[in-house]
Image 1 (cartoon, rainbow, N blue to C red):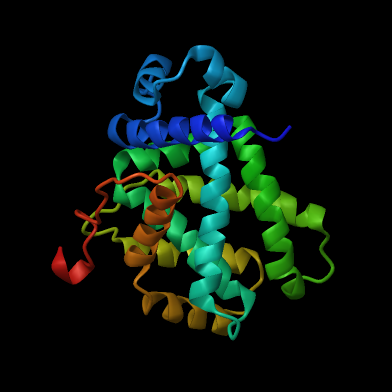
Image 2 (tube, rainbow, N blue to C red):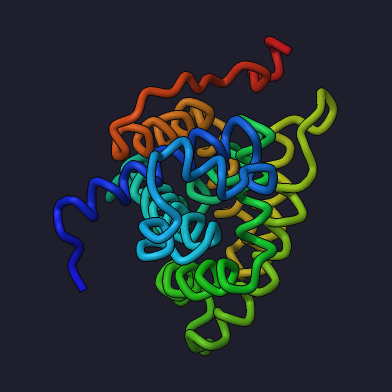
Length: 235
């Protein structure tokens, strides 16, 4: 059922409040009372639109998933093979979790909760089948779903480990992509070319743009910077 204009405004207000609260307090510490107060909505209005707090997270997950791939396709352009889109998109996910510890918690919740993780698996499988199908033409979309179960676990493991001076963001991206691209049977020479390409991208700025797109979508102003995630030579 399509939302009326007042319902759309209320939904945006709730999403705006939740993004602010999730980033400031973390997902788990953001209570329903805090959300209702910040958004100035009743409990019944919230439940009609989202049912529960996890419903908000699903809405945000859907937006971020689409926007990450959109940003990755824009960066890679039409001249590069689809594997470059995968490299940029996964690098964006890992970079976003380093921008803010509460943002890391949000992503970890997505990769932990069955309902949300199912969305990740099914949405990502479609992309994987299109991107890596040519490398393994005998595999079906179902096969790629099963491979996605493994790469999602890999992603969650790397997300959960914060970067340090020794384990820099660049090192994290290289290790993740080396493992995942080898799993998808990307030839070693091409894998190294992808890693070299990614190393030449300002992935931090691209990640910040993804967040700013979210803020713009919700018509909200929020100070969100890359402080603490400087390139290795500036740390």
